[in-house]
Image 1 (cartoon, helix red, strand yellow):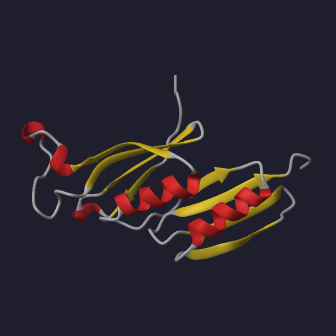
Image 2: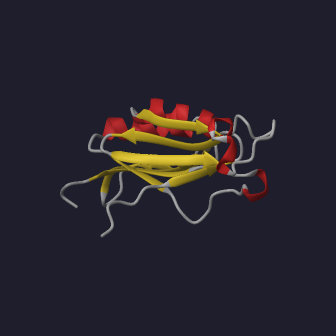
Length: 141
């Protein structure tokens, strides 16, 4: 039986910076952050000066949900496409705050506003390349 679906984000050297921002914006807490250099020598994890401080795994808890990620090996790094991380909130002001803060330095795809299904909805790509949707549903929709 499936327990949950957890977005796992891939970065090219900016994972720590991104997750520190996500922790602040989402009001979460980073529970785990492991670097390549933290792996045991016999674990098969590349231990080069270029990869030593890259994040091997990070786990953030916000509310009762998790967001995880890592810095991809340089040869496998790519821009995210074909998905969005959707943040669901109950308060329109909170939706606007999260949208504004995640959008700083990023690209707004759809400005946050009222829709036929939501009191607030907006789409953006943050400065780290992660696509987001912020949704504050209209309970009457």
